[in-house]
Image (cartoon, rainbow over all chains, first blue to last red; front, side):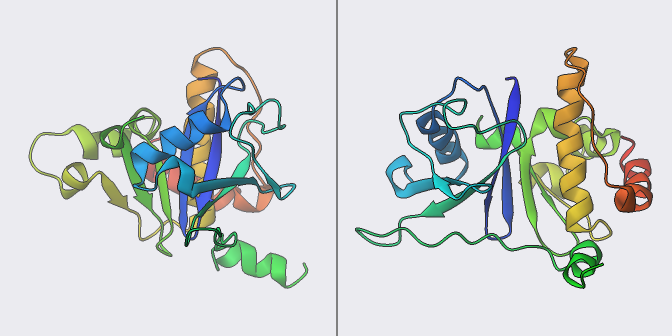
Amino acid sequence: MAMHIRVKRNKTTYFVQCDPTHTILDIKQKLHTLIDQPVNDQRLILSATGEVLDDSKTLADQKVENDAVVALTFRKDDRDFEDVNIIQPDDFYNARDADGF
Amino acid sequence: MKKEETVKLISAEGFEFVISMEAAMVSQTIRNMLTSPGSFAEREHGEVTFPEISTTILEKICQYFYWSLQFAKGKETEFHIEPELTLELMMAANYLHT
């Protein structure tokens, strides 16, 4: 396993070890072992670009690099996925950034 | 990656980081919590709470664990630390024996 990505949803971050040759489906299967959500009810979005990641493509294909942040969303009913929701910690460091220092 | 092979680290603000057992073991302190005999609650639930470590620092620590595993395998990349994090990160590293 040559790299890891950080998969985030709400207040939880999953560090997933992977290789650039892994497909998004591989990643979803790994996530399925950690959370109950079936593969088809997961959607992964590259945080830096907002691009929805394609199951059949590899991480390298879609420029997902080591330590990248990927947002995880779940299907909320038959059609739609929930919006990306990553809660940022309201701690000293982020409070300071918000103040524009 | 099976669920039993992961550990959940919880920050002061209640944010959760799910990492592999292997990565968590980079910290001697966490290794002791997870492997020592007797029934540490940490070992039974695979969860460790750090009420004194803020979320930003705990995430950086998890990133360090993974970087460290790669480094040990000979992949010598740099580990970037923002200057403003250094003091608190050092205190946490001291506590975690990392």
